[in-house]
Image (tube, rainbow, N blue to C red; front, top):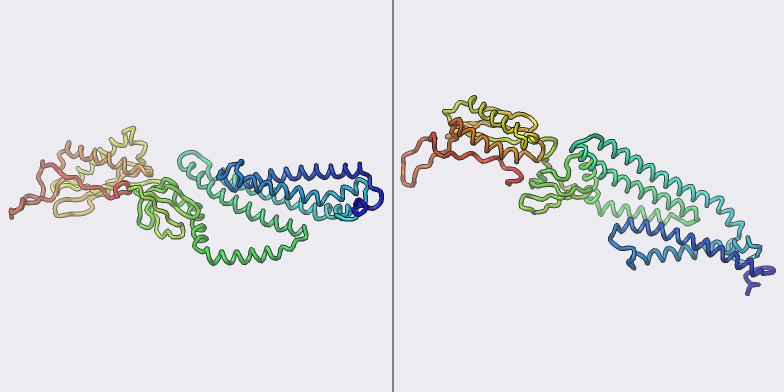
Length: 391
C-alpha cells in the first residue's frame, strides 16, 4: 500500500514525524477557529443560550472538525515532502508554496485591512460620542444617550459591510466563483426592497428622529393625537405609555404629528377669572407676588426659569374677566409647579379680598336671577388646561 502512496523508499520515522507535525498544526488551527466561532456566536445570541447548551456547542464542534480535516488534507502531503518522502498524490509542496506567497499573502492583507477599517470606524464613532456628549448637566446626558444610539447603529452597519466585502474577496482568492453569490444578493436585495419598504421607511425615519434630537426617552409627548410618556425609542418604533398606563407602539414611519412638551423648557398657563369690579392691575400685582414667593421656595425655585408673566386681560365673559398668566419651568416640572402656584394664588386672593366669581343659578322653579357675583360666597376656581397627567 505504501508503494501506491509514495515513490521510492518509505522511511517510517519521517512519515510519523510529518504526520504528527501536521496533526499538531491542524489541532492548533481548529482550536483557534473554535474560539473565533464562539466569540461570534456569543455576539449573535447575546445571552439567549448558555455556553453549555447543545445548541451552542454543536456548531462549534462542527467548525472545529471542519477546520481540522481541511488543514490535515492541505498540509499532510506537503509535510511528507518536507520530510524527504515523495507522495504520489496530494497538493505538491511547490504548488502550496506558490499559493501561500501569492493568494495567501493577499488574504492576510485583506484580513488586516478589514480589521483596521473596523477599528478606525469604532474610534471615529467613539470620538463622535465624546464630542456630542461633552459638557455637564441634563442636556449632556441626553446628548450622550443619543450619540451612543447612533454610534451603535453606525458601528453595526460598518462592520456588516466591511466583513461582507472582505469575505467575498477572500472567497475569490480561493478560486471560488462568487458570481452566484453576488447574483443571489442582488435578487435578495431587490426582493427586500419591494417587500420591506415600510420597514426601511421606519428605520430611516427613526434614524433622523434620533439624529435631530426630536424626542428622547422620558419626554412627555403627543404622537398622532395620543399623549403620554416615551418609554422606549428605537430605530423602528417608539413606545408611548399614556396616563392610564396603556402602551402605544408607533412605527417611526407612521408618525404624522409629534408634539414634545419636554423640549428645553415648558410653560404652565393659567386662565384666572376675576369679577368685573376688581382692578386688573391690582390683581396682576398680587399674582406676581404669589409667584415670587413660590420662586423663593427652595423646593420649587430650582424648577422655575423666569418670573411670572402676566399676559393681561384675555377675554370677557358674561360673569367674569379672564386674565392669562404663564410660568416658565424646566421640562416635566410644569404641572407640579403649576399646582402649587394655583394653591398660593387662591390663598393670596383670600388674603387680599379678591373675588373669583361664578355664574349664578336660580333654584328650581324660581324665575328671578341672582347677582353675577357674590362678594364673600365660596368661589369656584377655574380648572386648568388639560395636561398629559390629567387627560
